Length: 520
Image 1 (cartoon, one colour):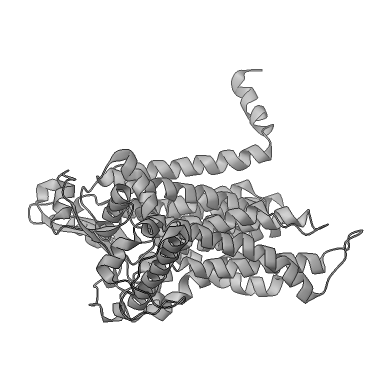
Image 2: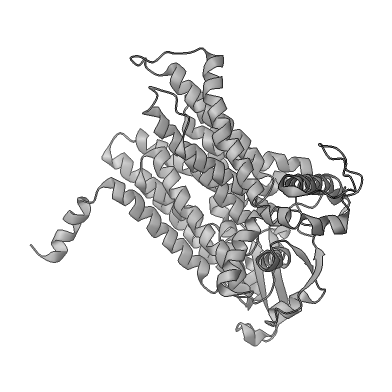
């Protein structure tokens, strides 16, 4: 038998467990290759990179965020990293967790576009891997898991966010990791229901992941709360409705909830809180710098442990108390600004209402350079060229995903299968809280957190169709349908690729891609 003839036979002997890693890792490597290509261009600070990339550099240099001088952006683009910061601490509106991840890239490659974007490339690609593994666990199918990973790899919004020094892609990663850990914990405990386990490794990892999510942006707390309750509910139902086990006493609903929920609260919520607090270590060490600028009481805000006193504190416990109290005041001040002060902010041309996010009603342009010479892109002499980087989801994926989400709601209610609850809860708790913030500028790219859960809904629909197929021919039709859908997503991705990557193109080519006026 020839070597080529033996290849299919050898591949067939590879265990499914191995394919369960080989496939998702290959898809993640594909996503990494797509995202890292030319990621250092354009060589400017795009949109809110002007905050996060510089804040990360300050964390790296000083351990806390300082204000930057007025011409800092010009100096950074020119490669000059001297004299960038003042000695004053900066009022940051998001925790430092995501910025520390950006700082890792800057530590490795320096303060340049590649350095402040490479962390997003890596984390975005890892999100593809985690999502593929999560869907594989939920469906038992490596092929459907890889399909989910490929859909995320070719989504435009996640692609662009994975090439920018913005923190939302890190939030999406940590939240998907947290959910994946809780789903793994569900499988782990179901074969150990003979006793109550106080130490749950997957719950501890979920707490770490959710803690990092909340340390990236505060709205991660909604996902933490919702899936924490959902995970406890999964175990309560398993213990109450499962078959009786020898020597295992079945408790009442309330007792079961307390016995299950107490340890889960410690493993998930308390651990998340400790992780969140750890990301503020730089602030806690340098809290005196913030007090020197903002005042020991941060204006009129009162502390829960009593007002500040002027006499100095001594000793480790006294310093720790003051540092924690300073951090509390800073949070109160920042929350008040986010809840009320931002309502007075000037309108932004790209702001949008969350009602339109799932259909990409108003994408966000993070870079636009127009009226470039026609010879830059081979346009007719009477035309011009331009360059844009647009935060726009893949239309085929997002519009189909909305239909899948609408199907997931009645499917969850009718079948009561836990899998349907994951995308429904994930999207709702990532989306609905933003309706409380419509009085201030908010942007559709926040929905990057929702697209992994939307893809889960699509994957579950494909899985249900495949299981419903009773013959080989029917299964072939299902896979053919899934293949055509994936091909359409890939074609749409390449069609919009020039405005995802800031390629210089003729004005007419750009305008052809603006399907709606609100996309301009």
